[in-house]
Length: 520
Image (cartoon, rainbow, N blue to C red):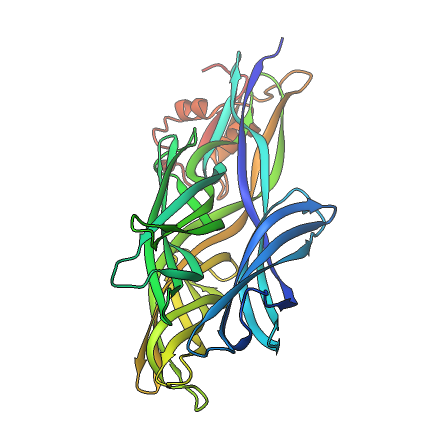
C-alpha cells in the first residue's frame, strides 16, 4: 500500500522566444477605370495592409494578406477637382523557424514603411511600396509540478515561494462599430466619397472577476467631393466601441495585454428625407487579441524526505518567461514640414494623414528609449487660380522615453507605436504638424527554475540511526533542514532537544545535539 499521495498542479506560461522583421515588396501597375477621368497629378496614395491568413507549415510561418490602396489625384480635364480610385493587391510573406520553434504562437504587425505612385500615362499608374512585418514568436510551456505530498506516515517538506507570471487567458474578441454622419445644409451633398480613413485610439482594457471589459475609440476621417461643386469636404466622427467578454478564472488584480486591429470596413451613402445624399454610413469590424497574466506567488516544494521510509524526488529545470510589466503613454510631437520652391503656396489645409515607424528601441536601467519617424502627407487648397490643390510630404523624427521599473539591458521589449491624431496648420513657408502618438511596451526576461515533477517511493527501509547521539558543531553553510535530512531526523526534534525557540538564533560554531538511537 502506498504511503504517500502526491498532489500536482499544472503551470502554463507564455515565453517570448524572439522578435524578427521582414519586408514585403509591393510593385504593380494599375489601369484607371473607364468611369474615371485621366490622371494629371497624384496627390497622395495610402495603403492599409490587412492580414487574411497565418499558419505554420513545416519549418515556416506563412502569412497571407492584402493591401487596400486609395489614390487621390487631380484629373487632366479639370485641375480644380480631385478624384480618387481604389485598388487591392494580395501579398505573401514567410518567416523561417529555428529548431524547436514548431509549437509556437506567432503574432505579426504590418506597417507601411514606404509607398508612392507614379504616372505611367494618363490611364495607368504604378504603385511601389514596402510593408514592414514585425514578427513575435511565443512559446507556450505547460508542465505539472508537485504542489504537496500527503503521507500516512511522517514526511518532512521544505517549501519556498515563487513569483510566477501564469498565462490565465488567451482569447480573440470581435466587435462591430457603426457610424452615421449627417451632413448639414451648410455643406454640399455628397457626389463621391474620395477617401475614408479609420484609426483606433484610446484603447482600454479592464479585468474583473471572470470577465474583461474592452473599449476603444475609432476615429473616422472622410473626404468627399461636393455635388455640383469643386469643394473637397472633410468630415470626422469618433465612435466608441465597447464589449464585455466572459473569461472564467481571471481576477481584477491580473495583468491584461491586448492588441486591436481593424479587419474590414464598408461605407455607403444614403439619402435623407429630402432625397439628398447627406447621410454617410460606415460599418467596420475590430478584432482584439486578449491575453491575461496572473502575477502570483505560489508555494513550491523545494525539498522533501521521510525519516520512516526512502523516497526519490524527480527534479527538472525549466526556463520560464517572466513579464516584467507593461507601460503606456500618450505623447505630443511637434515639428514643421518646409515647403519647397516647386510647391504651390497653400491657402487652406484639406487633410493630413500619416503613419509611424519605430526605427530603434533600447532598454537601460528602469527605462525604454524609443526612436522613430512619422511619415506625413498633407493635402491643401492652393492660392493658384489654375491649379486647385497641392500636397507636401515629410518625415518627422521622434524620441520617447518610457519609465519601466526593473528593466535592465538584455531584456526583451515589445513596443507598439500608433498615430492617434494629426493636425496641420499653415505657418509662413511651412506646414506645422502636431501629432499625438500612443506608445505601449511590454518587457520580458527569462529565468531558470527547478521544480519537483514527481515523488517516487523507493524500495527498502529508511536509513537506520547508528549512534545514540551526535554532538555537531554548526558550520557556516549548515542549516537545520540539511542536518535533519542528513541524520534522518526532523527539524522539530532538533528544536525540541536543543531548546531552540527561533531558527534565526542558530549560528556558526554552536554545538547541537542530534538524536540517534537514544530515546529522550
